[in-house]
Every structure is written in C-alpha cells, then in structure tokens.
Length: 300
Image 1 (cartoon, rainbow, N blue to C red):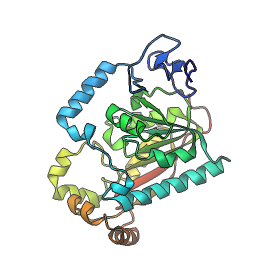
Image 2 (cartoon, rainbow, N blue to C red; image 1 turned 60 degrees about the vertical axis):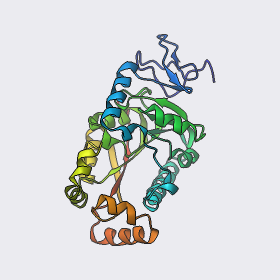
Image 3 (tube, rainbow, N blue to C red; image 1 turned 90 degrees about the horizontal axis):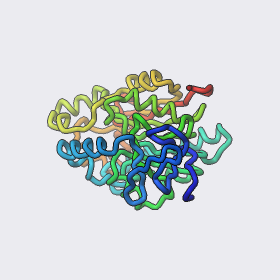
Image 4 (cartoon, rainbow, N blue to C red; image 1 turned 90 degrees about the vertical axis):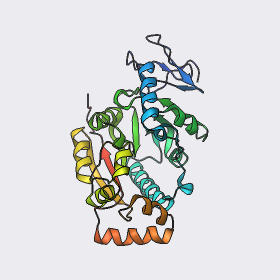
C-alpha cells in the first residue's frame, strides 16, 4: 500500500526499515530510488550498476537479453520437471515440519525471467523476487504472479536481517565471483531456522569436466565462474553459517553439451539416463540441489 513501509526490505544507504516500496523511496533518509515499470532499483550506486550491465552486454550479450524458456518450452523440460518436483517436495516437507502450509515471506533470489514464480507462489503468503537484470525483472512482472519485484545486489541485499522464511537460490551462485559473500547474505536475510534451497550445475564433477574438455569453446564462452561438486558447494555453505541437511543429485546425460540438449528433450531418453546414472554414477548428475537451514539462534 502507498505510504506503508515494506516489512522485509531495508534501505541500501541507511539500512533502516523504511522502504516505501510503492514510492521507491526511503522514509528515514529521504533517498529516492530509480524505478522501471514500477520495479524499484534498490542498490547503493545505480550508475555503477549501469556500467556493470554495459560491460556485460559487450562481453556476453546473451547473458542480459536471451529469453529463459519456461519448463515446457525447454529442450531439458523433463529434467526441469524433475528439479521442480524435487523442490516442491522439499518445500511441502519443510513447511509442514514448521507447522505451515505457506512461508510468511518467500524470496526467489536471482529470479531471472520469473519462470519459477508461478509454481513457487502457492508456497508463499508473500512472494518476493529479485534480480540484478531489469530486463529479466520486467519479463517476470509480465507473469502476473503478484510477487513484490525489486532489483538488488546479492552482496548488499536490501533486506532486513532475518526477513525471509524461505530463500530459493536457483542456478545463480555459479555466476557470482564472491560466492561465499553471496551465501553469507543468504544466511543474514534468513529468519532463524529459515530454509534455503540452492540449485547449481554439478560442473565440477569429472563427467561434466569431460564435456568441457571435449568442447573448450563452450568453456571459453560460459559466464559461469565456479564449477562445483556437492562437496565444494556444501563446504562453502557451511563456511557461510548455513547447516546443510540434504544434498540431491538430479539429471544425467552424455558428456557432450550439444548432444545433451538434442536427445534429452525426449522423455524416454532423459528417464533412461536418470535410471542408469543414479545406479552407476550417482555423483555425476548434471544438477545439484542443497537444502540448508539458518542457525536457530540469533546470528548477528
């Protein structure tokens, strides 16, 4: 509502709980923030953000502009369905353990084009979605999920300590140079005992490192800066103060980036790789999901 502060957000300048989200303004320090199509830009230095985006556009235009296909339109739609079903299962289980059907405040951190928002919305009393890319946020807004959208910097995220009961951090961290800093931000904004579900490629596994060795041009062009295994990302989550309670490997395919997308679009092929991979190469999946819990005691 206009004139009312948002209960989860803080000003990136004065860190007060005084963001008037509909006015894109901090009531405490008086700072006004840019907004695009009603989406506030809640960063300390919007000019620096614009320079970063310009640099990204020059080095890798697809990073900023390429449309992210929804599940049903993706060549990996059967794999994406398996990932979604797993996350839905975790949310139902963990919310039930907390005596809730929905999280009071739920954040999709690094939401991209918002393709996950329609199926995340039923798990949230109030859904928030953030990205560092305004083009993607405007696409997310067009999905009309009712989410509160904002542009924010993960390393200086404009949310209060303990603001969110659940953070969904899906296939984002591999793009962030300061990954431990990003995970510490997640730990800070989670409520005590709050839940983070983190997804990332399992590209540090030898099977997918083989795929990169077979196609060095793909490695040279990727915007991934980290190549995790379950052990390496779990250790970083622990270092950031999160307790890892579950690790899931999902999705197997051939170690060939081009062939993988061409043949796994067929359900029988994707299911066959899943069946064989789980039994013969359980740690060589294409995707990892880690479930983490913020400490129950006060963190700050």
